[in-house]
Amino acid sequence: MIASPQDPRLPLTMLAGPAALDGYLAQGGAAALVTDAAAPPPGFVAAQTIARRPLHRALCGCCGGRSEAAIALDRLFQARARGHAPWFGRVAVLVASPALRRDLEAAISADALTMARFRAA
Image (spheres, rainbow, N blue to C red):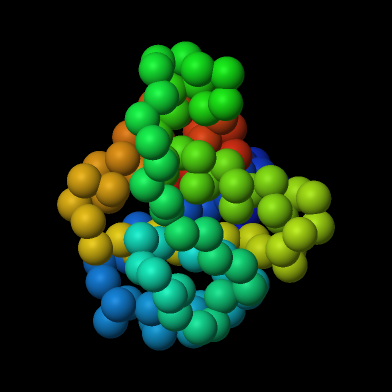
């Protein structure tokens, strides 16, 4: 599950639910997590919680109208790149909210910055 030389983007795996965590972590390699849980489960080297934020107008200066999911992935990637989080080679997504799951799927398929950094695994 480490990024291949042909596609250096980080693989992003949407987990079906908490029961899938052990199997994902057992695959080995440092992994990060994006979640909507208040307290991320253990076993990941980094975690980013998707935070609800006030609505901004479209294309504002701080977020450019991007979704909370895209911004959470951005924060996770930036933490890795800047050394604020341990290096990881894959990312798991565990969200309970169907709306956030759709936002994450949209980010990975339509948000230019997310698509440049992550690929669906």
